[in-house]
Amino acid sequence: MYFINVVILFAYLTLPGLAITRLFRLNRHVFLLSVALSIVVLVITQVPVRMFKVSIDSWILSIAVVTLVVLVMVKVTQLKRQGIGSIVTRQHPSGVYVGAALIAGIWTIYYLLVGGYSEVPSDFWNHLLRITWEFRFRSPEHLISMGSNPGAYINRDFTHTLHAVVASRLNIAPLDLVATTGYVITTLFLVSVYWFAYALFEPAGSCGMSRPKRIAIAILSVLLMVLWKGTGPFSFIRYYAMGPAIFGFILYFTFLLLWSDILKLRQYHVRHLLVAGMLAVVMLMIHQQEVGFAILMAAAMLVLYYLFDQRSMKSVKKYILLSSIILGVLVAIAGSIALIMLREPKNIGSYKLLYLGDYVPYFEDVFILNPSWQFLDTVGWFGIASLLLFTLNYRLFSGSIIVWAGVLVPLLTVFNPAFVYIYLHVAKYETLWRLLFILPVSFISARIGIEYVMRFKTGGTFRRVTTILVSIFMLALLLPFSLGDYRNTSSRLGSLVDTRAQGENWIRDVVERLNTVPRNHVYTDPVTAYVLRGATHHIVKGWKFYAHTSGYDFNKLLADGELPSFLRKRSGIYVINRRRTEGTGNGQDSGHWPADVLFTEKWYPDDLSTRLIQHGSKLIYRNDNIEIYVM
Image 1 (cartoon, helix red, strand yellow):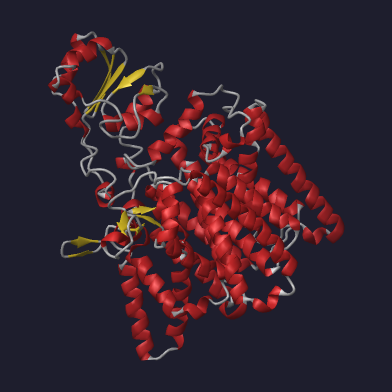
Image 2 (cartoon, helix red, strand yellow; image 1 turned 120 degrees about the vertical axis):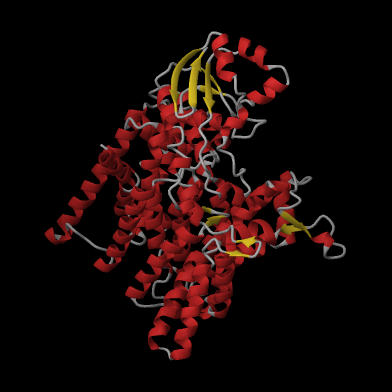
C-alpha cells in the first residue's frame, strides 16, 4: 500500500505538468517544468475549488482525467506525424537520465535507513499542525473557503492542503506523512536540483563543457546541496521537507532557467513569459519569500546580460524591451508597497543586525546583517571558502549569469545599508538572513571541484598535492569540528542522522492511543502539547513549545497554589509525560531550544497522578513513563 501511495503522489506531482509541456511544446527543462507546472496546477485549481465549494474527489479526479486525456491526445498526434518510432522519445542521451536515476536511488536508500526529519520540537510539528488544521476546520468533502479577496490567497497554506488531501484520500495518519509526501517531495527536489545544475553549465561561452563533466557536476551539486544548504545544524532538505519553501524552490529554480532562456533568446515565445509569470504567482501564493528571490535575481540577471552580451542586444532588442517592461512593473509594484508601508522599522534585533553607528561616524540608525551570527550560520565556513574559490576561478563562470547574479544579489542586499533600511520598514529583521539562500554555493563548489579533479589528472606533482589538500580542507569545513573552545555549529550533519527516536517515534504510542479517544481538551506539558497539537485530533492549548505559549507547567501551578482549582475546573484528558529521551544537540547548537527540551518530567509534580485519581480521573493508558487520564 505504501508503494502505491508513493506512485500516486509522484504521478500527481509530475504528470499534470508534463501534459502542459507536451501540449504547448515546452521542449527545454522538461523535468523541472513538469514538476513546477504540476505544483502550479495543484495550487491554482484550489482557488475555484475553494470559492465554488467543488468536492475534493471531483477536483483530484478532474486533474487526473484531463492530464490523461492531454497526454494520450498529444502522443496520438505525435504517432500520426512521426510514426511508431516516436513512442519513446528522449531529450538527452541515456547517461543524463542514469545520473538522475542514481540520485533518486541513493536518496531512496538513505530515506529508508534514516527516515524523514521530525525532531521535537523542530518546525516539522508546526507544519504538521497546519496540515491537521485542514481536517479540523473543513467538511470532509470540501476545502476551506478563502473568500473572493485576492489578498486572501497570498502566502497561504496551499501546500499544507495538498498534504492534508493526501492523508485523507489515501488514509494516511498525519504523522506518517513524513514517510510518504516527505519522501516524494524531497526526492523531486533533489532530482530538480540535478537537472537545474545540468542546465546551468550547458555548452555556452567559455563555461561550456562535455556532457560527462556536466553530469558529474550535477551529481556533486546535489550532494553538496544536501550537505551545505541550510542554516545552523539544519540541512534545508531535511528541516523544510514538509513546509512550502521546498515547493517554492523548485518553482524558483525553474523560473531562473526560463528567465535565462528568455534573455538569451532561446525561448522567446509569449508562452514562456506566461509560464514564468505563473510560476511567480504561485510562489507568491504558497511562500512569498521565493518570489522575492526571483524578482531580485531577474533584475540582476537582466543587468548582467546587458554587461556580458552587448553584441546580442541589437537582435533581441524588442524581447529585452518586453522583459524590461514586465520586470519594471514588478519592481514598481514592490516599490509602491514599500513607499506605502514606509514608517518606523517593525522591530530591530540587537544581535542579528550590526549597527554601523558603532563603527562608522554619522551612520546613525543604519544596519546590516551581522556577519558573525546568521550569515555564518547560513553560509558557513564551507560557503565562505567556496566564495573565495569563486573569486580565484571566476573565469569558469563567465557564461553563467545565474551564478553571477546568485553570488552578487545576497551580498549586495544583506550588507547594503540602503537595502536593509528599506527592508526593515517592510519586513521583519528575522527574515533578512534568508536572502542568503540565494547563494549558489553548491553549484559553484561542484563546478570548481570537478575542474580540480580534471586538473589533477593532467597536472604535475605540485598541482596534485595542492588539489588534495584543498579538497581535504573543504570537506573538513562540512564537519562539526572543534578548535579549542570553538565548535563548528554550522555543519548540517547533525540533522542528517536518524532523528526518529527524538521525533515521530518519541511518543507515537501516545498519539495512536489518543486518536482512538473522542475529541476532547488535552492538558499536558508545553513540549508534549506541541507534538499532540498537530499529531492528534484533540484540542491542545497554545502555540509552539514555549512555557508561556504552550501547555501547562504543573509544578508552577502547584507552587502558586492554583493546581487544586485547576484540576477541579478542567475536565478532559491529562497526559503525564515523564519519558526522558536524549536530544541530538541540534537545538543547543542552533540556539532554537535547550539541550534538555525532551526531559519533560520537570513540568510535573511527583504526586500529580494521585491528585488526578482523587479528582475522579480514570487511567486509560500507561507505558514507558507516560500516563493518560480522562476526567
